[in-house]
Every structure is written in C-alpha cells, then in structure tokens.
Image (tube, rainbow over all chains, first blue to last red; front, side, top):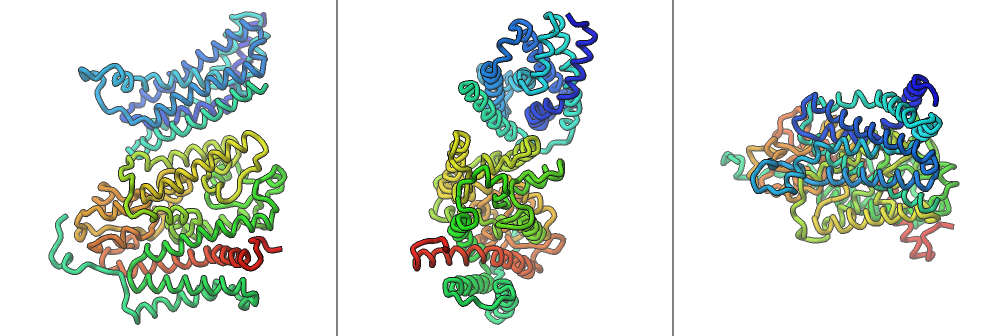
Length: 219
Length: 394
C-alpha cells in the first residue's frame, strides 16, 4: 500500500486540478437553491453548503469503496460508468424539477390535520442539498476517473478512502465562496426566478442523464 | 381610483388633426424613401420594384393612420406581423440560394455558414465577455446574417427602444402577435404570476451552460423558431431529438399558447432574449406610464397586455413591469387615456403626446427599415412563385 501521506497529498492536488469541473456541476445545482429560499440566515447558507459537501463526501467515499471492492472492473467499464452517472443525474433531475416547478410551501407543517404529504412538502427541501450533493458526487468526470484510477492503485480500503477524502478537500475549495451569494438581499422576484431556474437546471440534468443511459445501452 | 371631474369628463387622445398629421408624417415619408432606396436608383425588374413600392406605401399609410387616430398597436401590429410572415417566406429560399440546404451539416458549422440571429445574443455576449470567445459557429463580419452586423443592429435598437425591440424589431415575435389575435376571447385566462419569471430562469440557465460548454445551448436545444428557419440535418438520434423539441416548443408556445390565451406566450413565458432585453428597459428613456389620477382600475390594460407586463402591483406604482415591450396595446385600450408613452424624468400629462411621437419616430423607422428587406424579399418570393413556379431565383 502507498504511504497515506503521499495519497493525501496527491488527492488534494488532483482535487485542486479538477475542481473547476466540480464547480461547473455543483454550482448550477446549489446556486438556485441558495437564492430561492426565503429568510435564510448566513449560517443557514453555510449549512446548505455543508450539507451539499457532506452529500458529496458520502458519494465520493461510496465510489472509493466501490473502486476498492470492484478492483476497477465495474467502474472501468464504460457501460457501467454511463449507467451509474445516468441514474445519478436522473435523480438530480427529479429532485430539481420537483423543487423548482412545485409551488413554494407556505403552510405550517405543524398544523394539525395537515397530513404527511404536507409535512414532507414543507420539510424535505431542508435536506435537499445533501441529496443533491450525494447525487452530483457520483459524477464520473475526467478528474474523477483519474482519482478512481489512482485510488484503485492505492492498495487497500484505507488508502482508497484517504485518497478520496483528500480529493474531496481539494475540490471543495472552489465551492466554498458560494454561500456568499446566499447572503445577498433577495427580493421575491429573485427568489421565484431562482426556484424556477432550479427546475430548468433539472431539465438539463434529465437530458444529461438520458444521454448517459442511452450511451450505456449503446456502449 | 379617485379622479377629478375635469380629468374624467373628456378622455385624452394622442391623435392629431389632419394638418398636424401631414406635417408629422412628412419626415417619415422622406426618411423611409431615403432608407428604402439607400442611394440606389429604382429597380427596373418589376418583381423587385413592386415589393419596394408596396413597402413604401404600406408603411407610410400605417404611420399616417397611427398619427391621425392616436392608435399605436392597431397599426404597428399590421406591419409587425407582415414582417414576421415575410421573414419566413424570405429566409428559407434565401438559405437555399446561399448555402444550398436548410438542414445544417457539420461542414456548414465548421465553415461558419450558420446565420446569426438576435435570439442567441445573450448566450453569445456573456460567454464572450467571460472567455473572450465567440461561441457561435457563424461568420463574424461578412456573409449572410453575420454576427457583427446583427450585434450592431441590436445595439442600435436597444439604445433607442429598450425592450421595445421585441415589438418593433423582432421578426419572430410577429408570428405570435398575429396568432394571439385570432380569437376574440381567450380560452385560458389565468396564468400564475410565478411563470412570468420563467424567461429569467431560462436566461440564467442557458447563459451558464453556454459559458461552461462553450456552445450556443439555446440554439441547439430550445429555439422554437428553428421550426420555421433551419435546424441540424436529421442524420442522427441527437438531431431528431432536437427537431422534436423545436417543433413541440413552436407548436406549444408560438401557435397554441397565443391562440388560447391571446398573449405572446413565447415572449412572455419563455424567451431568454426577451428577458435579457427587459433589463435594457432600465437604461432606455421611453416607458409606458399609467396616470393614477385618471386610472379607474378597470383592468383593461392588464387584460390586453400580451407579455404579462401589467398587474395590480405595477399599476399601483403607475407603470409596467420591466418586461414591457412598448407595443402600445394598453395605451390603445385604456378607456380613460390614463396609459401613455412617457419619457423618463418628465411630467406625465403635458408631455404625453410629444413623448409618443418621439418614441414612434425611432420605433417605426426601425421596424420599417429593418423589416422592409424581409417584406420586400418575401413579396418578391411570392411573385417569383407566381411567375416562375419556384421561390428560388436561378
């Protein structure tokens, strides 16, 4: 097994090198959410980013474990890669479209007789960034594939997880400033537009998901 | 709304007397003659001469009627819809002559033979500012609908009209405008206000994706007007998927939507170019204002506005939302003469007639000059079809 220190260092560097790609994927997903919610405090914006990052970390570590378990056989296959990414993107699409195009919940979840659906509708957006982070974390972009290759060479589960954790730190640097935008004053028009933009981004991810799934079928 | 007897007893009208109309129409007569001829002698070919004279007569008759009756939208719409219809009649045969095909091939893209239109401007200028790269596969300065010339035209119109461009220049908007007048009463009356923010969401998304992927996303995937202009040659699954999207959006937003709502649904609920253009209303000197003292809150203006630009909130502030296209429909419809064209920073009532005239000159001249080429060529193609059996000149 390669030394942990070396794996950590390499993970951070690979993450920093490919982190703009992560910004391109996670930025359009997180930004509408940060701008859409009413009355969010500064800390709530940071918490949303924290959820997204935590979701991504879980996604990365899941890939790290898969990379170690499968010895690259599954993830090296273009078909499996396409199906994994396609499914994850469709998951993002469903969440974003449901969030963006459904009317903003105004009722109080604690109202007696509101029913389970009303409660879910009022509360589920609070965990939305974590779910989106997890699903976007499964994105097998070129730097991520490099990371998988390196992690598979790490020679053990601990090494693989260490490498992906460091890779996560490197890529997260680019996402750290995003909550600053959530601190801006947001009139009703901006919040409505941002929410609808989440739906439009969802449609885009649906397209990406379908392209990957069809690509997997044809591979 | 409270109003004084003196202001409600005689509704204000921006119409002019015949002598004043003649005097005000004279500059337009000379300007259109100058612009249409462009320093060239009259063409000898009757197939070219007849359309030229037709445009000259039609535009000036409409302008005279606009001045005399005080009705803006009624006569603007005739010319605007004519431009849009003639654009379609002119564009496809022109493309066949210039490029030889309607379906874009890979070679056409590489050689930059894709005509540039204003719809893609926000998805081009913002990535260009960020990356110093023009992402559109068209010719920059020369050739058919080159990027440079379209940008200059758009900039001029934007400075003069703001989002008025969408009612006085956009050769796609006329299709919807015409179709929104087919029925006398709308079948669908209520559209949630939140959906009027969708164009801004589409704008933000396509600009970000265009900048990240360095491709004109809107052109490739979302433009309804590809259905009546050009699209990728149907040689693979992707191109077929794109064509299905184009035709679906065209059918829904440009045909069915306007007919059932009597609104310009593509412009008001989807168009990212319109959303982008809306911001230029903030910079433009002209606007539509509602005099609260004359307004009786009848809601007629809100009802007729084709782009959802008037609501209770904006009326309470005495104006329109930023999405106003300055078509003049609310001004024509207001029974109290409370809605009027206005120059920012000036008093409302004393300036109303002169403000309308000052707006009409650049707006009408732009529509006539920008659209005259399309009307002339469209009529030429029709005459060509009648006389030779083909719309393509050999």
